[in-house]
Image 1: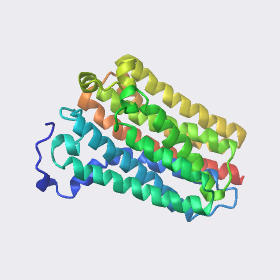
Image 2 (image 1 turned 120 degrees about the vertical axis):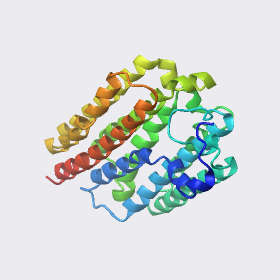
Image 3 (image 1 turned 180 degrees about the vertical axis):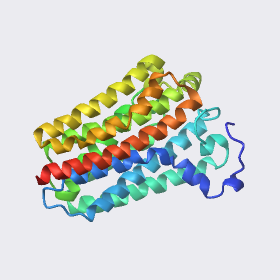
Length: 300
């Protein structure tokens, strides 16, 4: 086992750790940016809270589901990253599975409420998101083991979460919103890329064919840089079609420089854990500055 800390010693804190707090910015950022894109079209602001609940609950649900599925497969038995509940033995597989269902259920109920207020087509999107969350590493053919995890993250924590928030808040969709979602998705993917880069040796050993395993160490590092460039291009694009104020989001890109430097230095294993935190902080900075810039641009 990768961690010998008794469950009783951790208590309720194990569920906080198991929710993977460092990944939560990936759920907050699209809601902030999507709400900003809705600001010029008679927004119903209180719906933002429900959109945020959907996004956060889905992220936590994915994390618990991943913990459960990898745990019962033995993938997490020997890892260099943060504690995993099932793999470390601090929580039973059944309890983690139940926690995943509860989180995904909360996302489903909140999403149903938003669908009833706007369009029932959102139910289709919601069902797809929940199924994708569970089959990421669960089920007989988990697509996360086939190198498709980044596709899920980009689509659901980038495009869907951003334009979905814009729609439920203002019931409109705009070109700026679609383009802004690219930057959001790129950063969500960048977080996953760092995580999978760290885990290449262990994932290779257990046959988990993530995109990082397939691409190899060097190309995965290049891919991380490409994602940051893609985010920068989309931010500039939004600025071009609205006003330059939207380019304030580039501050978030600049804040990623320490992480880019560390990735470029070839850090591996546990040394990459702080890089995850650095990318998460850069995500939040991007969310704040890009959101402010978009609001100013759309109000100008």
